[in-house]
Amino acid sequence: MDNSGYTTLTRQSGLMREMQSVANNIANVSTTGFRKEGVIFSEFVQDLPNEGSSLSMATANARNIDLRQGPVTMTGGTFDFAIEGEGFFLIETPDGQSLTRAGVFTPNSDGELVTPDGNRLLDAGASPIFVPPDARSVSLAGDGTLSADGRPLSRIGLYVPETAGDLTHQGGVLFSTTQDPVPLDGASILQGFLEDSNVNPVIEIARMIEVQRAYELGQNFLDKEDERLRSVLQTLGR
View (cartoon, one colour):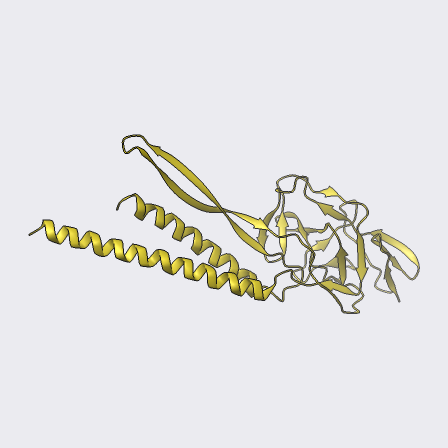
């Protein structure tokens, strides 16, 4: 295979990754707190001194996470929380601490606020949040202070990565960081609301069509190159 074939193959590989990313975004258009992802293409150029030219190879291994705010929907749930602005909830998982924008919580058998997967929500001091089982009313102030029957219980912590690029998608609505997340002040938390996915289905479907067409063009080129090489071999073999 010549250089043009290898270049097209690397491009096709990147387009396949982007198609998978777009498909995952569409699949999570209704997932609470989901963050849209994209693929970043980069170019590697190698000088070919013997041929007096250069070879360009494309890669698409890096992912970009869209952190823009998603729509906020009123639910009326006591333990449904939505973040306005920056920040993430800090969650304790079996694999360590994780960040999430999905604010669906409920008290477990011990009275600790947990996610639907049973992971504990942590406060501003990275400790579990306990709600008394006999509490008649639970309210949340805008600064994250949680109170039961008028008595403050804890302050829900909001955190951000130490650097903008230090955020890795673990799966679902959870994110991890290589360094400890930094506490965030000044953000607002709403009680009785949930933040929806920030995926725009119309834009994602349009992007899927673009990627599919680009992939088909590349595949047509590879098919024609294969036919050309077969024709040359048949001619030389006579």
